[in-house]
Image (cartoon, rainbow, N blue to C red; front, side):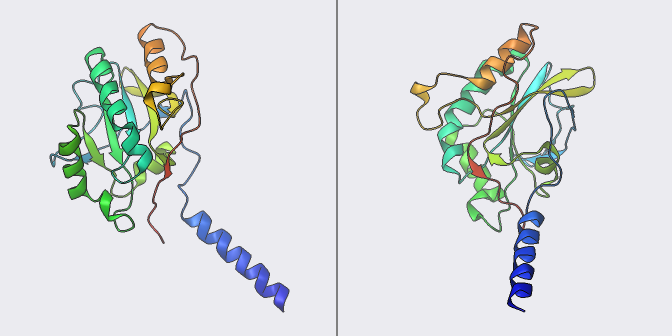
Length: 206
């Protein structure tokens, strides 16, 4: 009888862990990414297709307000937008977290944070978490560099922004910059996927 209850408990824990994970494995380099229509902090809906600066592609960053890793990368995300938006690869930030689990990631707090930091890019809310699950985002921050090919958006890079979250001055590999520079030069992305480092996304609990 004890063995039965032990097995039942293990199965229940496994189910709960599984039910809080995103569906599917998400996108890999070379996949065609889904466009989206999400609410920006200005209250307007935004999609990649209607984003005028995204003439060649986009740097999609799943991020949030509360995560220490996201905070450490905010200035670098702003710098990415400043460098690559004029070249056709603007940043699009998406907050996928469930605000009922983390109140600091509420839409109102997103507006406050964007104003405080002077975000130069859209900061969208993924209220249903459908886009984060579709893309396969697991952490904040988690980056997907997309190349625009006609009406399609092709994933060219997935992973971390660079190799040193804690100290920008000690960065040796700038993964996102290298990827976008490769694309702008008409080259194949030399390192198309690296592990995303950051806080786990706070999924809605069943």
